[in-house]
Amino acid sequence: MRWRGGRQSGNVEDRTSGGGRSVGKVATGGGLGMFLIALVVFFISGGDLSSVTDTMGGGSVQPAAYETENVSTKEYTDQKEFAAVVFAHLEDYWNGEFEQRNERYQNPKLVLFNDSVNSACGQASSQVGPFYCPADQNVYLDLSFADELSNRYGATGDFAMAYVIAHEVGHHVQNELGITQQLDQIRRRVSETEYNKYSVRLELQADYLAGCFAKYLEGETHDGKPILEVGDIDEAVTAANAIGDDTLQKEYQGYVVPDSFTHGTSQQRINWFKRGYRYGDLEHGDTFNEKNLDLAFAY
Image (cartoon, rainbow, N blue to C red; front, side):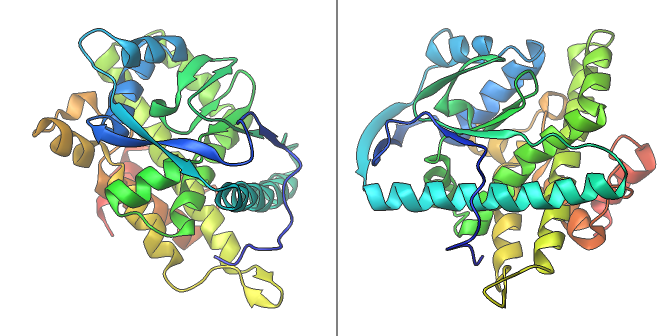
């Protein structure tokens, strides 16, 4: 992805120590496996991030052992600039889409942090991974998540991280469209197992919206050259595969429990991202329609 020198979003708040950082390198356990466990608890608890932090810190689930590694100021600055440029592109895209619908779009804010962060949804550890809090309309991101994707799961390349950011902004779009609020109502009426199915649909729709963003970038240029480069879509697909519920459960517990899925299988995540990349509109992204959900296996 061509991004250097691109416009940076003004809606970025840096809550890190700045000037470089120490990142956690997983020594035993943890990583995206712990991310999955945390997310399961997150949805079961009704979206209270404080309960996720509590689970990460004790009980039957043990936190990962970490070694720290200094990241240079330059590397951190590059990662921060990249995130800000991606966020700016997302602002341009979604403002344009909502304008075409004669609707108002409120830009979210990107909050960069390390170790832990306080949000309107509660306190969260970096081990939870990137997340969106509808209560304050912020996307929260520890830039070390890119290291985890690349080093542990082989999801290398800058567009793997662009996909992650676009997915989280997709949740903000759902909030703007009122979809998040509808699911909050459903959560109060159904069982945990039943709500997990709605959670999967919500996440797959965010993957679809990330694909729509990729489609938009395909037609954009920077310094006269296409923003998307050869291999970018493959990088996003690799990332989607790495964080599928079935892939993570197989790796960390050796078996799959479909009723506990909250984000969808690797194949579903890949297919809905590709579907968004194919159509690039909101009309084909209704994951809550049973017929459309079946299309996840059609590619």
